[in-house]
Each structure stands twice: as structure tokens, then as C-alpha cells.
Image (cartoon, rainbow, N blue to C red; front, side):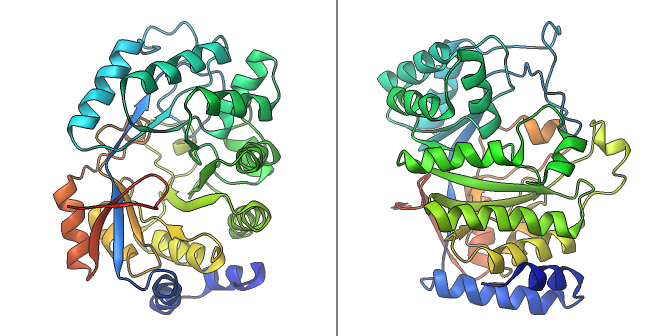
Length: 343
């Protein structure tokens, strides 16, 4: 694996193709079978009420706002029912940090879903779990254990943004710290749960801060081995307060370089995902030669990133086509990247 100083040097290196080739070599070593995977799932945002007011977010609404909501259980059930009918195998469920929903509400929701559907529940980012613990007067470990026992299967990597407290104070001052984000994933791993890690870059951070993020993820993976995948994506500035100060979004070239360096830096995480949601299908496809071995979800529903201006859409056949056209074998996978489905 490369060092932090080597990663910083690569960010300054103009040889984009050379960096991509090096990352592709790591991908070939970890995935010699030539398969690129995807998942059919749905992103359900159970509430948009939030007390954190992150400057990069166009989705949240403050408490009492006319556009705020908490989805009724029947609405959530109907979304899951539709997902299952479309061949979906998982639900990615996340929401704002609601100051009044205690753990019993979440436990009841999880149990209600599991009673009705055979589906994998990949839910509640680190900030949400920190919030549930605080509202309920529980430790993070006890919160995760109770959610697991109620039906939570794995935890998504949302809320990471950049794992550097100077950046976090600037763009999400009220949200969990770097140490608190890592604490949730460490405790989940210790409890036998798998999680993913993400990075939202292009929000005004320095290269050193971007590398610090990769280093924090790598260290925790060395300690626990609990991350299944790393998913970098770019800040979308439309309709956000932060977008008034960060004038330009990361380019496709910057995305591909960051993707490739992520693959080189995080050799201890088996899977790296190329994003079509923020970058579009063509750049996502090129990312498969820059170290990525997965294209994520067809995303039957997505509300948060689209609120900030990302309007790309993809069907299952479109994802399978870009995978084939890039020279790979497309395979539908499960949330843990362990099972391929026949299709």
C-alpha cells in the first residue's frame, strides 16, 4: 500500500492515465475474475427533519417546516414492496437527525419490516446512530446492538464527508466529529456487523485533508476488517449554502484521479465503487479502468444528492451495458458483496 506522502504526490502528478493503470492493476489482483457488480436496492429517506443544518445539504428541513415529514410505516412498506417486485434485495434507509425519535421508534420500524419482507436492511449512518444514542440516553454500542437485534443488518458509510475536524467544523459544524464517525463503525465491527465507508470530496478541502480521510479509513480497516467497500463521490453544489463559496464542482478528471488513489491507498478494502449518481454513466464506466469493481445501485429512489443537483438516472440494463462495454462481466450482488445472482 502507498504511504500518505506518496498519495499526496500522486494528487499532484499530471499523469492521470498512469495513476489509473496502477489502480487497475490492484483491481485485477483483487478481482481477477473480470466481474463488475451492481445491486438493486432502494434508498428510503424516512424523514427530512434535521437539526444539523449542514451547508452542503439541500435535503433537510428544520423542525416545524411545512415541507418536513416523517414517513408513515405503511408508506415505507409500500416502497419496500415495490422494491421486492423489481428484484431488489436490499433497502438503504437513512434520514435526517430527528430530535424526538427515540430508539423504540426505530426498533419498531425494523421489526415491522422484517415481519413483512425478506430483505437486507442497510440503514442509519454514523450521525444518525450517534443521534439515536443521544436522544435515547444510550451508549453507541448499546444502540447498535439493539438496532441489530431488531433487524438492522449492516450500516452505510454516510455522514463521513471528509474525516478531518477542520473541514467538518466548516461544512457540518453540528454533526458528529471524525472520532465519533469512526466510533460507530468500530463498535459495529466489534459487534460482528459489516459497514461501508464513503468520502464526499470537492467541498473545499485540501489534498492533505483528503489523504487524512483515506488514512483514517485504512487504519480502522487494519484494526477491525469490517468495511466491505469504499465509495468516493463528489460534492454537488446546486441549492446548497456551501455551493455559494465552493464555486466549481470537482471535474471528471479529478474524480477519476481520486478514485484511483483511493484504490491504491485502500488495498485492505476489497471493493471500491465508481459513482454514476454524481458523475454520470460515462465517467462511471471509465472508473472501471481506474480501480473500481462495482457501480453501485440502480437506485430505484434517491432524494438527498438529487436535491443538490445530481439528476443522473440508470436502469439495470444500462448498468449492465456500460459494464459489458468496458470489457467486464456484469453481476448483480448482495449488500455484502458476497453473493452473485443469476441474471
